[in-house]
Length: 212
Image 1 (cartoon, rainbow, N blue to C red):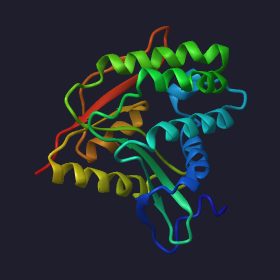
Image 2 (cartoon, one colour):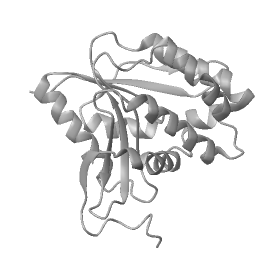
Image 3 (cartoon, rainbow, N blue to C red):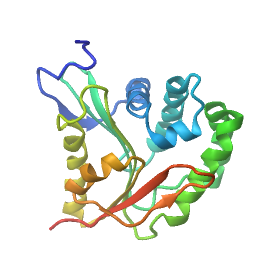
Image 4 (tube, one colour):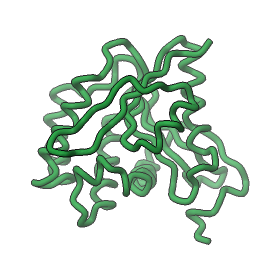
């Protein structure tokens, strides 16, 4: 068994990611999203994992200045097991200037074929994104071989406990139907469907009211 897929032997904790871990976080999320239907639709098969790694480096660059930032589940030895990107209320959408500055980097990630599709995904998600202030979870992933061990749910429960304490809702889009029950167990409910054009995959927007 590889050390990457082996279960953590010394336990783990939940904390904010350190700036020096941005590469490791991006690589972990790229592995977790390698078979994601929406990523597969946007990113060409050639060098997909490398391209998705670059995507998550960019996502973190925009995420870190926001409340919530990047949280990880990590062992005491520093091994990352799972990662989540969070945006606090009113902070989920990059400014037009940020989008423009990042455009060349995103074009390098998605390529000529994938860039129009990436734009369609963003537009479709923005169109139905709730206006009510909330915490937004654009991406969460557990490393290969560790899914189903409770690491991802433990990572999310810490932020959701903060949402409950503050009386604030949370929102996400699930890109895989198999993940919907996982989020439902955490208190999210499906609010509709986002059908991507041109025969693209479906996303499920999910909302969670704070628990008292």
